[in-house]
Length: 596
Image 1 (cartoon, helix red, strand yellow):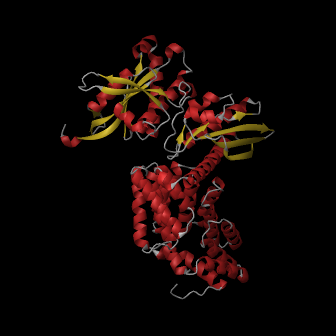
Image 2 (cartoon, helix red, strand yellow):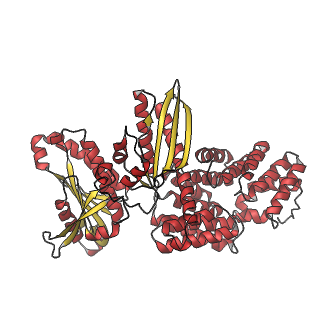
Image 3 (cartoon, helix red, strand yellow):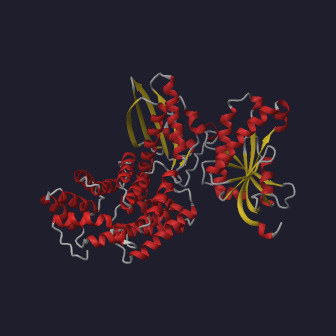
């Protein structure tokens, strides 16, 4: 094989095989093959979720590679937890236990994705040192993972491994996120470097076994959906369901599972209605962060379960995000780490004043400097620069927009599964007038995180500006339903107002504009829509009041400048909206020169 057909790279290698495989095959060959096939699917699913790649499944083994040792260890812990849960359904002598070894080292990757080298060999030797159902990692992996995951390690010494010249430092994972293992140590698990949450089983208060399945289903779906959010660490199901039927102190749960937040809830059925109570608790203090009650008609359990899950995930994103932003804002600036710098930047980003956006950019850049692989602040920088352009704060809109595009693309390059990165890129494409590209990116963001209200709102704006107001209203409705407490909720109503304005539903447009204005973070923009809608309804005195308020907020307002700010590279892309706005604002009393 030629040199051009292979490359070298640094990778985290996960090697696994079945302990006692020959014995299992001797007892029941067909049953063992069926179990092995099913358990391999568990590996494949978790590896994909952790952005790894399964590169070999010879015999009873599994070999996978990851770009990050943190992802590799987290993946291994979740695999073992999942397999442990599945083993409970098998007779004790038929249970299949994998041993897993993980190493970080240089490997050779051939063009058929097979990997070779000492990095792989060491992972295989570590796997042979692992206990059945256990994980052993090399010292290089431990050095990268320590304190970044809610797992504990035990140093097992320098191991002399076959065909490897130098001894290898080895560490055994002695506790993952399960309550049984973590109680073995009095020392609480350290918190991950991102928000961490455990979703406890929801209590069934109905005395109806059907509701038991429904209650469990909500908790399980929540865990699955929250696991798709890249900035959140979510404890595995088997760990939290160990608390089923108990009434634990959430502060103890937080210590045992190594999480900052605990979610708990209950389900109660009455007639043809069901009531779901949910609450989010700060595990450090036991204080409630958020609580909500949902009353629904009990028609189709699965549809209802999906609806409640989507709503709860959206609410949790908003509430955890707000709590994290406030926590970072209260901390001394010199003590902020990368995550906290990012959260403090978000605190300023959603205030939309020129000085706030400047401070947001400074904090995002600090987070990037602290962790160059952290995709979220890179994406947020793109959003902040986008806001500077659309709010007419940028001295050079074209240059600022080009910078925003570069940051959004870089965020996707760092993590193409990060929904906020695709949201940022979609927003930039929108203001560039590239609506097809914008809509495509925003739909990717929604696919990655269906409960992300911001992505639905961003898609609504792209749709309304591309001449699809009915579709825009649908997306805005979804955003509003998902996140009434979102920091951008005023913009959700504003975009819906704009869509209704272009549909000539002026009463509805005026009502949505008023709803937008009620929020303190609202800019001058909803007043623009309100003045236009009222003037087109021939309510000129009210329109003049709205126009005066607009000019009070933004004395240098110019319709031409406002339109250009929303499409600086292609102002003609907004021409369908121009006549409606011109007619309305002239009727409201705004002096608009012909060139505007």
